[in-house]
Image 1 (cartoon, helix red, strand yellow):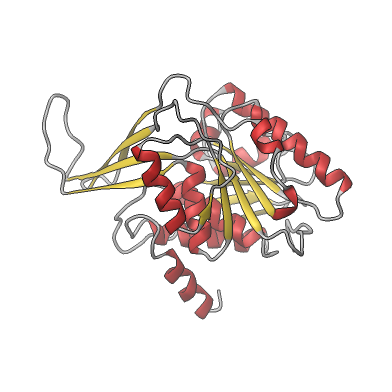
Image 2 (image 1 turned 30 degrees about the vertical axis):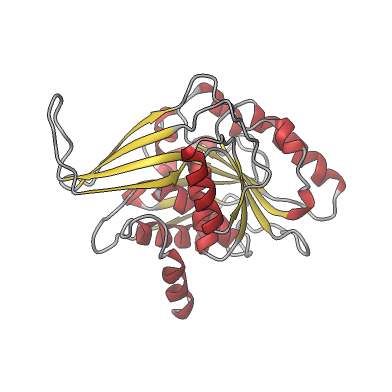
Length: 317
């Protein structure tokens, strides 16, 4: 099976996603407003956001046991997010709490006319990132897979060192994946890490690659031996370079009507690692990721992904 690796068995049954959570305000507008103008929104809702948080929502919808590790506060917005995590069956008991901080938040404008989304994010000065000390307190025997958002560097590198030390002495290996999205020089340090390296289209372009295949070929010698590189490319689908060097691809799946594209990339990532964790091939996994991400774009939020997954199972796919 192309790109397959031995996965843990037994009591390691939880996906751990390390990264960020914030409070999202999402406005749907007939069109993107011109500067110094006023446009009446046709819809508005609040949502728990952040890449890692979104991926946890998807994993939970797919029936997986998952946990979020991200900095949190104690203000009103943080309480909303904690209540939503509980309702979504996402564990967060190991999240570091900073009562002196204010919760970061994001305003998102979704344009009906163009299908675009414009994001304005506010994070208070000095807001902390998850650090290796937080990670070192975890009982790694609980986890079947660990995923890292590419943020707060170099701390994720220190956390990966902890996993490598664990894997070196444990019979049950913990596979881990990394996501390269933030366009910053520090993000490059993650290319050589991870059993599975997810490279966002935005970051691939930041590196100078104009398509998924050139990114796969260009990064092939930079990842660690045996690593799989996965490059989602929006409407063009996704491509991957398996651990044996084989290149596989999957088309994109568009919904009948685009409703909400926010979190589509996080959905692809979560669905892909979910399938990989079941020892599915890389080709099957990225195709599943595209199916779920496409379906998500046709719904508001993530509630309903479980129904899509049930239909896929009934169809034998």
